[in-house]
Length: 164
Image: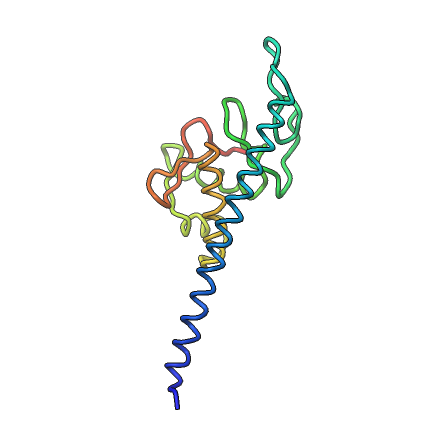
């Protein structure tokens, strides 16, 4: 007859393997999604044609000129950062991450890991919440809004602060 501890360890091992498989599947799905977003942005830029003179290019997210940008909605695409683009174009969750990192220290920006960032956002520091914050921070870093100084440590470069 198997021991209770042995049965629990077996179930724990099976659950861990399932979580690892799901995380791998999630990473693959996110990579595919990122490629589609980039493709859509590229097609939008090409279809927009060359910009004439001093006129600003249309914003890929909303199709409007930067001066006319509407507030972002949850689930909207994170645009690549460029000069003059304010954090207000980001969805609310991303704006909160920018605000927390931008307002952290006397220098105007702070480096935080995802667990600290989750706590600062008022979330429980449980793996599911921390991974959600990590995913958003990685996306912001990939688009130029944040800097990942070392693996898992994020900060806002000078001039890209929150204030939304």
